[in-house]
Length: 608
Image 1: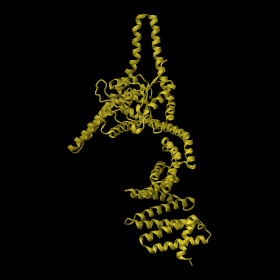
Image 2: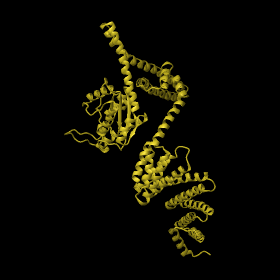
Image 3: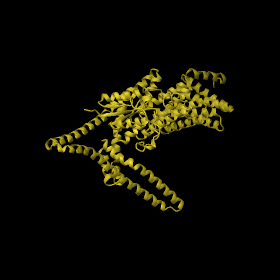
Image 4: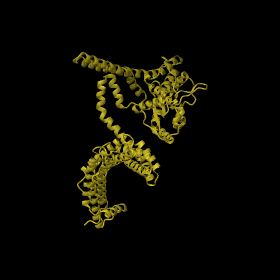
């Protein structure tokens, strides 16, 4: 028995090996495959060969990569025009998809990501081919960029049409994706078997009649076999024509309404403009009617129609556009609920499977292998970009690595990490409900990006930095306002606000624009007030006493920077008083704080 045939499409210069991998996997699943390794040359021969092969296949697998691929020369053949003039120019690989869609074939797409093996490196793809003896291309980079832009537009159109549902970051993933589609492929094989059985029954019955009646009935066998095929085609044509007639009616009704609205306008210029707009919209709608009507029959022919779609098609044929829309509107809540439930179940299964990879990312980070940790986090987030349980640890990891690179590595490495942290934290807090810990993470990421921008110091960095500092302060102020009046949650929120105030104050003090010193003073003083309240609640806390000392020191430094000696002397004395009182009460500080204490003591002496 003949096996179902599938066409495997890809740009050979980039994905020849991956295409063979898919073809081999499909053959193991019981399918014959057609690939382009041995195709004829020449535009006319190749295009005819592609059409013939795709016509003989049940569906098309396409591997979508970076390369645009070979492009046929211009062709205005009226006998064999392009399947969609709007997509011209297009490559041979893109043509294979267009032709398959126009013929109503089943299609599957795998978007090939950087981790997969490529036959050529990306920078070598889509360069111009120069014939022997011919002069070199005048601008290979521009040639390559133009074709990359065409491929990018092609990918975006597939993505907008929801074709790109499967991504592969490794050769093994490509193979596994084909195996995961085995249920869909099995349905395809079963449908082909049913069609063969039906055809066999018809021919078998006719052959029995032939034995009874005699050779004179032989012509009837040929006639009845053709009827089986023609009836299906005729039914599809009826469906298309009926739906097309109702769609045309709907377009004309809308056009007449627009003309009536235009006629009611107060002046002739407005009437003329609205009439032109109505005519343009009518032309656009009519241009799409044939494709829309044909899509109903194509979906039915592929066996993809569900019960709601089948009823929609019937209503559209028999009653028109408005009743069909009313029917879909009534079914819409149930459809959305069903799809959301199915998506949620699939998403949870994906996350359950990815949990070991997520855990391993944390383990790599703990053992001091940040490169492997980053790779695992990226793999998980590429597949589940909105998973809160992955976004939070990934954001903290990126933020901490940015902090490390900023202080002990390079700013070139720190800033991208800080931006990754901000991106993950932004996605984490994009959908309510948002937990306080998630907002705190967002503020930490915003502050980290601001710190890196300040250190980089390029044009425009200062304006961006102050914006991020202020956004972080707004988030933390909101958390403080929502916190209880006392307790650990209040202490954390209050200290976070004081740290953010000091960061913004330090930036303004260093920038030194008109008004910056006054703003810095206000921020420092408010931070000090918050920290004094925290220390008053637990006076034996070394950490809270140290925070108050830091605030006094920042105010003293601001006084010296601005020439306000009274401010500087006041806060030096206050700083020393806090330290002396805490040490006398038995509070122990770290060596740097003790060094500050001894320096102040040598200048100010023991307080009386």
